[in-house]
Length: 223
Image 1 (tube, rainbow, N blue to C red):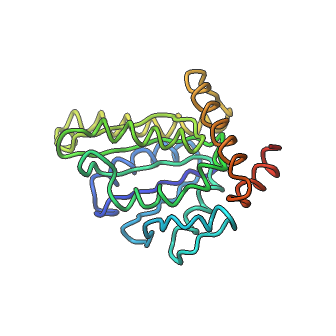
Image 2: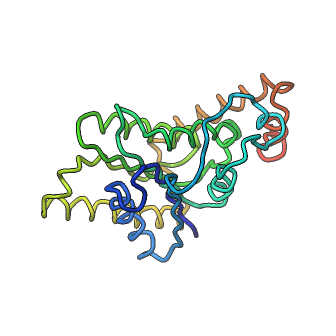
Image 3: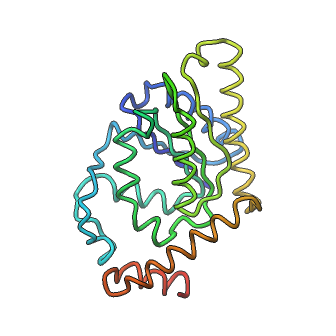
């Protein structure tokens, strides 16, 4: 069992976002699963060109680290998306990764995977970013185990900081248990099924324009 974390923070391993993610990964590892972290600050993920070559061939024309991360995502049982709050949205590094992931989304390659989200914020609107990342997880077809929106000064308070770290560790532990039992979440089922059918319809509509996606659905989804 493997859980991967994709951390968009420009501060990488030294940032506050990483500290919170590490607590989730601690919970994952305590329950016996393997973890891998990708720090986008150490990698190169360029913005999407909108050329749609990936939809035709399955391969992105941009030569950078995205394809390597994408393969790890496909092979993982769980995923954590993490970002600081930048102007009421995720940081540019994580947004580039998300925008490059149209095949993951449209082909529902992560259907049945388990996800969590972390947002850290020095000001307001962190919850807005948290909601966005939960939305992204649902677009990917993931069951969402939990998410955290952390106001950075909270971590400096001894009691609040301890509570946050424990909450994060609990999310990691819950993720491993959910993966092990193949747990389903009734409150998320209708939304995930609606998105699944929506993307199926899109791909069928653009059969000639998106041959890779269409063949993927035929091969892996029987549609």
